Image 1: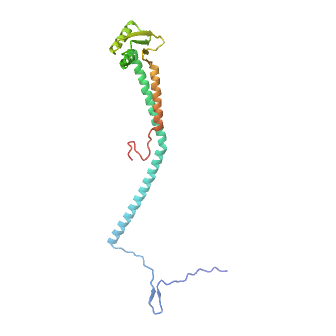
Image 2: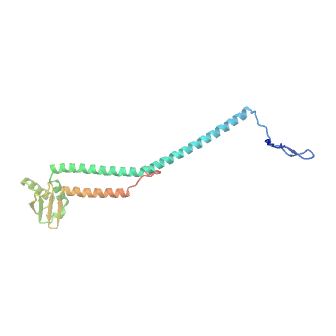
Image 3: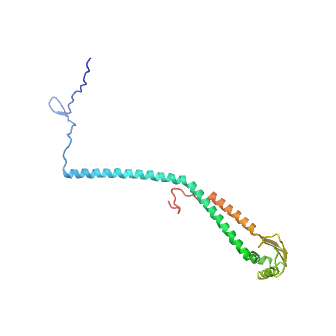
Length: 222
């Protein structure tokens, strides 16, 4: 058995009728092999423009992919950055509070009557009409009591100043009692209130602090 070769019938591109009139013209066009210099320049310009457009499109695609990657990275980093910023605020507040304690301790050691003087000046109008003012503090020498009496006089108090020694009170602490009220100061209690206020402020800021988003700059401008 012999293999038969496949034969492709020849087809004429141009068809004629019986009278020799062309019914269907041939679609065959010979390949052009020569161009004028002007045509070459036009073809080169078109090729350059096509290449430029393709390069620009590719660059825009790469840029869009890069921006998308940056946006995703920022979105993933924002929670961490927010935690770091809040931790930094907490540490800064702790440092400020610690520095305030050191400064306050030094000031109270040097001027232990400073808080009492400030209290008398602030309460001047309240204690002015009282006939008696009781001051409870640590043990005071005569010179210290004389200075406090002078502070009361400077604050406008003209009644009787009675001193009560309270050995258990820390330095610079005091208690004031008059007919219509009472006031007290104790450094550690004051710092405890400062600590409580600071913790409350930091907790509120952690719950309501504004965070940055990838489409918003730190100045709030897109």
